Length: 209
Ligand code: GRF
Image (cartoon, rainbow, N blue to C red; front, side, top):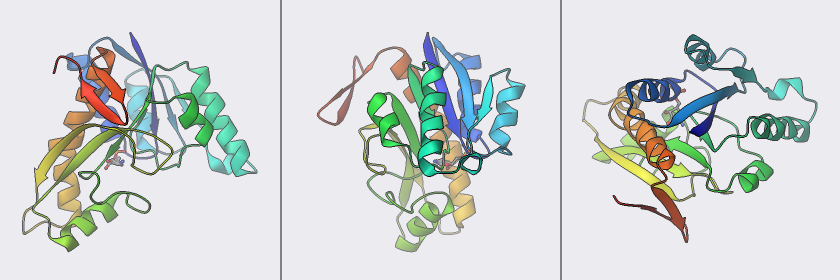
């Protein structure tokens, strides 16, 4: 049984896709042991509670220094003894120690086809605004392992999504979520749960796939 810790900051639609995926059997042998948010009022926490999942809040506001906050995050995450940490819209740069302690055991979803429209400052609507500005015909989403860089870890899965001429950043964001994010996130977790993912030299191979 893969023990999942999900870190969130916002609406939690990706968290919902994971909850639904476990319930429907798209994700096998997996249990969400805890959902931790850095925002007290994140709707993602409600989704977790509704599904009967243990929740916690670790907010920067409750700590005097960045170090104390990062320490709390590291302790909060380690306590749960997760096999895998999932960043599902978690808008905090992870403490280095957390990344080191959980090498190739933290995954993130990014709403573009990495290496396009990623890196520092590329989050939320900004990603889609830039894609529209550049006039790309295809965008998409990427699930990747988290390393010490920004959106630079080994790529697990990607899915392309068409860009339409009439798109606004909001419309494109929604299509990327529906057609890509909510599909490849559960798929990636299932592959990891089944032990089908290996990482060599920064490259992911899917065993038997
Ligand atoms: C998604 O667009 C995801 O790609 C990004 O943050 C957003 C989170 O949305 N990393 P939600 O909280 O899962 O609804």
